[in-house]
Length: 264
Image (cartoon, rainbow, N blue to C red; front, side, top):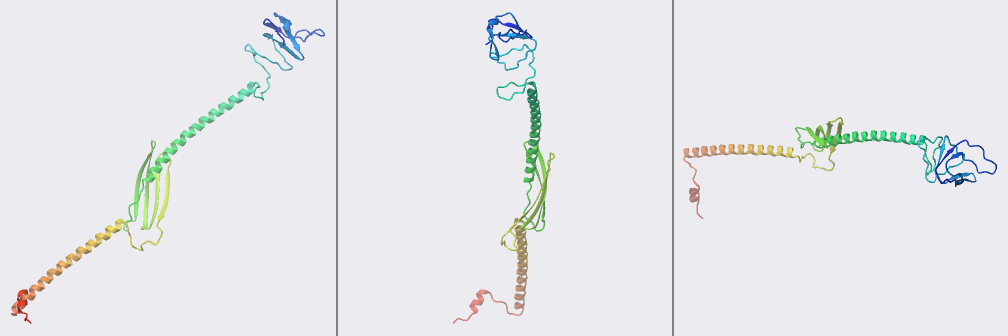
């Protein structure tokens, strides 16, 4: 290798060497040039050296212990292609641009995720409000029901209103909507029963209560009629007894009637 026991300074543009001499590396000042030699097309320096001015290497240059550029630039560096290649400023700038773009995209994505979280909370509140809507029991005389509800989810709130219509005990139509936070929701549905059923008979609590009340009214009316009839019977009985007394045919009492019966 090209070696020097002392650090040396190399000046470029050295004069051409004599025939047979080693290829020059410049005009050295200081140091021992005996430690600088060539091996084929390679010039080897065993210790430190300094090159003043621009340096041009037509072949490859190998630095076993690193190279100190003293704050100077290395220019015309090709883009690295292998894992152990150096990279140039263009490659670094491309990576930096990509990092900046990724940072911007991550910021946009984070904002979108936050907005999505807010929307999910508002949707959850709307769903809770819709779930609070319930119809009342079937009433043949009042087939249309209205309902209102409130929902809250993770700080977001919503209100809901709905309507239910039952043309019969076996069919129901419904419509509802939730509002709050800009995430409005609507729904509509129909519910119906299938099967043989029980004909026209209804089993709703409202209908059964009305039927029971009607039966109670009928029983009360019948009780009143029975009381009136009993009163009339008592009056007729009194009139018959009075007529029999006037005709001398008083109605015998139970004991007298039994005594008057002939013995056999």
